[in-house]
Image 1 (cartoon, helix red, strand yellow):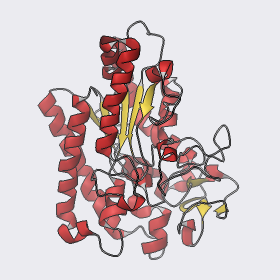
Image 2 (tube, rainbow, N blue to C red):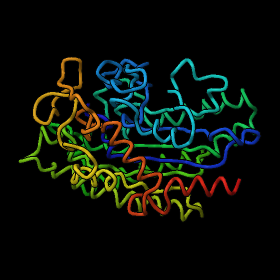
Image 3 (cartoon, rainbow, N blue to C red):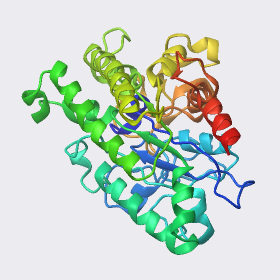
Length: 366
């Protein structure tokens, strides 16, 4: 789905710290913002076409049922929760998000959204990032009513926060065929700085709302996903325009994060290089046990990259040997490789430090 799979290409923010007082043995809370790479079911509750609530989505999930995750199994937040020793945070719109479940955190993400409010307008009823942040405020009020204002503030300050945005602003906005308003308004060299400036406002607001350790991932290999290969590729080469866009976006994002940290006087924002993490298995798939990094497991047409993944689609028998599940989103196994780089990777993959280092530092301070 031309959604945030791009998130593959997207920006991932993570905020980390110590567990709430009196709960030293409990995992820290985890909050998730962004698009379809990290949505775990909010869009199930909305009237939108940006959804993953029908088979074969979820075919390898523990229940073998679709959950709203754009994956054959677990997605990036699920795997990060595993590393935290925690159950996955519930979608914010879930009726089960109450009582003790509030202490686990919440997932505010919504498939189809971007940095800009006009990204994903074709999906109609999705939770744009500004509303996601408003929902975070509302969540904090619910948490305060449950545990008290001081304890609620500590849970939020000490939480791990993940935000993934950016890919849709290219795939489902600027490069949306035939001609988007934004592509007529901006040359790509001017559009990217505009995106970065708008993203800076979002991250500043997230900090104001209590996020204190934020890992931001850049866009992944958006020109190389099966949908783009199917539509724009010549001889299996990645789509040039989207590759150029990602190559412009990622370095500017890293510079923006460094500037925010300098203003704050602390390494709040950590840059996670999704492009590098996915580059490794995109161009050396056999080294990672994949038979292909170009053909989606579920879909139809060239590279299985045309249209949606539905019960009528081709579905590969072994998802573990495919890097892409559908036209835009990685398989669980590819997600595990990406998260592994974020958790334990060198500064080529995440800087100035990886998430494991952040968590260890914060726990030592606690």
